[in-house]
Image 1 (cartoon, rainbow, N blue to C red):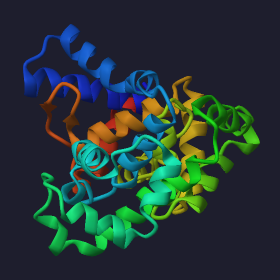
Image 2 (spheres, rainbow, N blue to C red):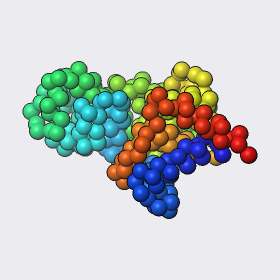
Image 3 (cartoon, rainbow, N blue to C red):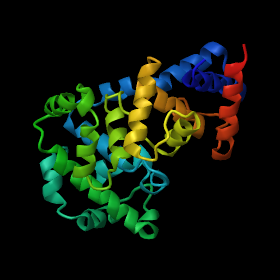
Length: 274
């Protein structure tokens, strides 16, 4: 049993124990969650749909969804404030993050109460909204972007250049969030080196690095060595740390930061047992 199989078995056990699923039911729930990238890729029909994913990922960092509102918050801003699917018009209409922020203040959104207390976070998000449109408007359509992305994605030595370009072009998007954009847009050979991925990758000795770039590369190499998609390994690690099966609405007991060491030690002992 390798590390991924151990994690997967843990998730199945918790779904059965915590949520009362049969083994078959637990397998179905886990399979749906681990293969979500296929549904997300098929859900992106045009450049505007990709732009929406850029914004969802832009606020997909610790604590920020509680301020912006997650996917629901992004959709509210797109529908009530942006109100156009043309990326060039977005850039033209909102020439500064302050202009966009003032527009947001004038509409009714679920997270309106955070606008005053978390202004700096909102301004940072507004910068991402505008610079994402600025970056994506250079492409004629979604196929044009896909061709550009594939020219790097399909070349092993150039693959990580794609998230590096995005992180350089879009305000507030570092390497981890750029990888998140890509893995949720139909590119399953990327992982998002967020806090949970880092913790488990280090605990399992998949990586020894502190660099997001190196951690991502090491986890991709590990995934390939066990014939799994990096996206699937990434999602399994994240589910173990968060306990949040958000597609089905199920919550399981998560492996907390302070319990990771004992969790991994248990795996090592089981691995040595004949």
